[in-house]
Image 1 (tube, rainbow, N blue to C red):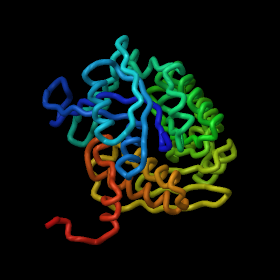
Image 2 (tube, rainbow, N blue to C red):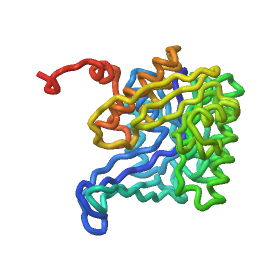
Image 3 (cartoon, helix red, strand yellow):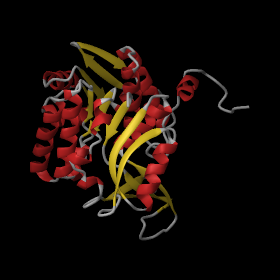
Image 4 (tube, one colour):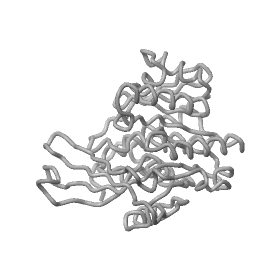
Length: 318
């Protein structure tokens, strides 16, 4: 494996196709999602070599996810467990202007992942290892496994990327917020590249202002800090210099997965040796393209998609 390897949780996804909660309607579509699988698919769509390490239930959803990843060109290093199910998330629309996501992940196969499950050679031979803060929150064993993977990568000289990806419901209460901040800071210190939204950067650093937040993250150790600002674009801090990227204007259908698509674009260019400006440009284009389609990963862009976005053209293909 000489490409980008991600490690994390993937969940089956049931999406209601009509307005109303699942207590009122039964029409739904089946898919899957998860930050790290989204990034892996995004890298593969852009022509990069990508792998995903995870643990799924030996059930219909686990097999579905494994098959779909491989169909997308992702090298799926999966342990299918018979003692625990694949996690599930339900997404419905209780009102026309609101979405609701409910997770069923307690005791899932992903939450029971242990360091012994890690494919050591895959991590040591990767071009980069990518993880997120979700792994630190779903269980103690998942957190241990993530830290073990990061240490394996560092010992082998493999760069480590970390996306904070804070999920407040996984860190309940004020004490949970403090625990999250401490856990994130420890992993930031082990990473080479760190991604964070401005609210996540504030949580980790307790700083106000984007520049102060990025500087405080960089002071913990990473050589590159990328702050994602949504509709306001993004910027990277490297060697004391700030590089800004404006967001592309698109018709938004669904913002879920856009941040992961941005990360996939940035990391794809990082392993290709591109400049920081190009990493940000491809990341922004991939994130914008993802906003134009529903789903967690279905809107991941190809190189052709990104090239087409840069050309003013008739919206109807003939």
